[in-house]
Image 1 (tube, rainbow, N blue to C red):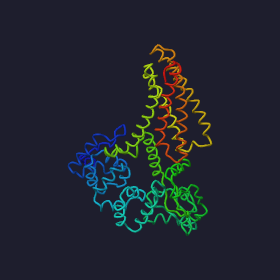
Image 2 (cartoon, helix red, strand yellow):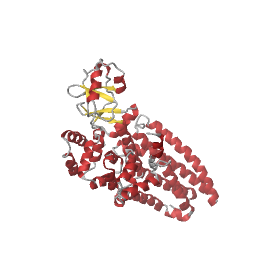
Image 3 (cartoon, one colour):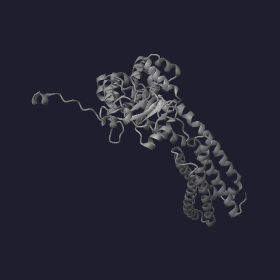
Amino acid sequence: MTQADIVDAEPTPDVTPFRDDEGRIDSSFLEQIEAAVAERDADAVRRLAGNLHEADVADLLEALNEDERPELVRLMGDDFDFASLTEVDEAIRLKLLETLPKDAVIEAIGELDSDDAVYILEDLEPEDQAAILSRLSVSDRVQLQRSLDYPEETAGRRMQTDFIAIPPFWTVGQTIDYMRMADDLPDTFYEIYVVDPGFRLIGAVALDKLLRTKRSRKISKIMQETRYMVSATEDQEEVARTFERYNLVSAAVVDDAERLVGVLMVDDIVDVIQEEAEEDLLALAGVGDEEISDTVLTIARSRLTWLTVNLGTAVLASTVIALFEETIKAMVALAVLMPIVASMGGNAGSQTMTVAVRALATQELGSRNFWRVLRREVLVAMLNGAALAVLMAVVAVLWFGNAGLGVVIALAIIVNQLFAGLSGLGIPILLDRYGADPAIASSVFVTTVTDVVGFFAFLGIAAFWFGLPF
């Protein structure tokens, strides 16, 4: 090709970047995609989205309207990676699977990595699972069904069933030749596992060690004992903690007889860590397994339970106020100031509770260090309580011109801050000890304690200090 040919050649049209400087989907890109989908322009859709990463395609699906999503998948054709469906909200994934042609879904699931295929299948109804599995090859069906038979949120559900297992008497050269000739190797792997004739795991060889060893050397001479193998029935949160603690990039998964059944990769564990963190965060706010794409009725139903519980605790706090009805009538300023005491206690309790729930989740808090942490929280509560008490006392004196009122609210704040620290630490630990999830239930109880104690301490001290009717 001459220089003139290069100059005269038609330039390749610029493609708008997918994300803007803040990491969001670029509005111009989204407009172009929506226009291409509306016009059913498959070439434009493939030009814009055909080379996107599966996570980016997932974000794109979530950004589009419900009726545009299946059309985007259809227009992308073979360029659409069904692994993208593992990155979208469950509601979107299920809706898409309902609208897409069944043959296309079955073919795609058969081509996915086993862990991605299980992730998609596990949310389907049993009859839909069975219908899809029955259309797959025998080997794929057996692998996927075995993973689906394990309980949800266990290593068996997360594992990838494609791995490399070899006998210990092979040489390095045999192993390398096998990997070069085999057609069904995993797309990504970091270790080669060594098994006995019963397929029980006896060791592993890292790829870097294999490639630096002479071809004649036996695998049994260079393998290392697998110290961090994972049981298929182990909870995924415990597995994630093992990965985090030992900086693992992969781990073998074994059944009860220590037979090798799969492997977990760090990318799957990152998803687990994110899911568990989101779950705890939502639970602390009294929100269930809620996603941004859920319907109004679904969201309302998930939130109503804890709102009802909160209503009950609010009534309990109000009964404490009712006990001091005559006290409040005698000094109206008490009605103005008492919400401040309860609110400050609630905030302090939430701070302690959040730290405690996180420490329990990461196993940093237990019986071995409970008293040390308790002493720390008491001291923190006393220091913060004293500082806030002085500040609020000054405000109360300037506001109402009553020095006694400043003393009363200062004492009440100190008392409530102390109870906030104790309940913020103690309630999550008690719930955890008796098998309840502290992330879900702690906030309701901590708020109740700080409200009740705050109102009772402030109004009770005021009645005693000023000699008001009780």
